[in-house]
Image (cartoon, rainbow over all chains, first blue to last red; front, side, top):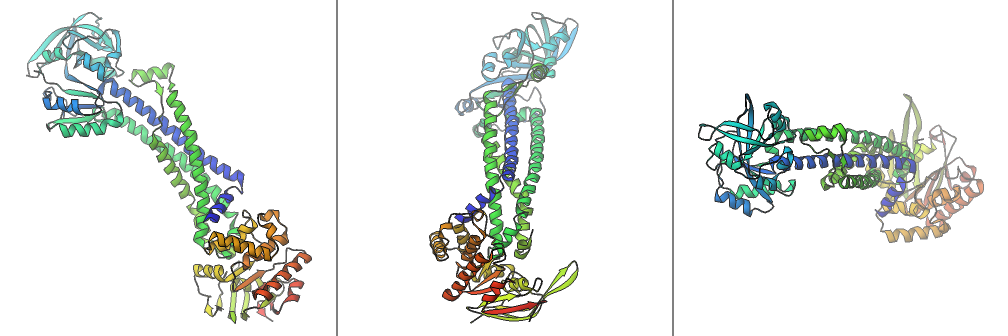
Length: 409
Length: 222
């Protein structure tokens, strides 16, 4: 066995140039896959984290069905059981409550549709960065404030200015129409065209008052440390909250569009990498085939002296495995260095591209990650494809007759 | 004692669709301790016969008995086992494994038989000592002369104590003095260890030393 390993190892270095070429191809495929997946997943993570911490939170508790079909009446009250669940579940950093409603906002002769959000600014800032999206003016400080912050575009559409008083009209929880006056304290840019044109943020107590919610809320928004904690926390909450009319939703369920666009981009990224790896696989096939064919004579001799056919296949397979493993390790190391460098020094997107990213609520930044799964998945994929691409040469070795080998020139 | 016996051995090759009879009705017996030379002009069928009795090829018709067992219809795997356990080969072009040293080349066939590493090394060194090539132990084939390589090839062929050693034109690539030394060595092995040798050659000095000469012409024994 040791001699066979030695033979396989030395065979690799018989034709240094070819082995280095094969090694380079495998290393390149691995490092490209590691670096590209790193950037892809790292950038997804940073954007998901950004989106989650911007508004949706990592987890939301809502009435079941509210997410798909929002209605003012699908509200709930925070019971002692819910409060207890939130306070005793590990990894929950903070939480806040929200009320959502549709309404009309009017200033002088202008009226616009409004997406009303009742928030508690004191707890909201512990959960999301919503308050940091202020563009002009300032955010109100208390849940009962009669000030509101509206989307920057909405302010323009209303022909209003900061400090103006507007009237907000909406149907309440009890079905009656209610209207109240509010002062615009500031405008915000949310990175979403819809929010910027319709978003109206007011104190949750004021929203409760306007919409006659009687202490009911529509969403409990929960902040965690990382995306990896979502499933555990969600399971814990599901165990602790007995009210089956409530649903514990992850960010992906609250923002299905973002999740889908990431999944689509992810699939296209994986597809692109597979194409790259398959191209490299053809290179490996070519070099292994050459290496095997030019040793047919030698193989013929070893078969003649009694080497079993399968052992010969095993020898060639060992050579392929050796070279593949070296290539993968080198690729993982170089790819890891690239990923680490980008993690430490994220690439900031400047000028127009960066501005477009920001406008849509994405961080204008290319980030990477050192996630172990990237290295493991890439290594396994490259290894499997390298071995698969060697099947044809191995079959040729298996079928080689000793005499044909000896006579091969 | 009979090692190999052939009965009405026939081998027909297809040369661009044209059948060519390489061996025709060959009856031959080789016994333990024989030192046989199969001679004949080029194309007479020497190598074909050697390949058939060496379990490297199958006859078109006829039978080959190896230690009284018909091997003409055996599978690839069974033939491979016979070659490994019972036969030693010496080729015209030495055909040592280029990336292995002399001692590793000798150990290689023992490795295939599953001989433990320590025993392999001891046996390889012993045979190298006997063939006076111990100083070549750590040299690779490209660091050795043709004669030295062929001596290592002889060591590789006999180290597993085969029933028979088949040598295909073993002196063809050697000068006459080196060839003669190599033949001395094989003759000595034949005499001292009773190793059976079968040569295929048209080299005069090989033919002259034959204890038994088989002359082939147009695929038939003359």
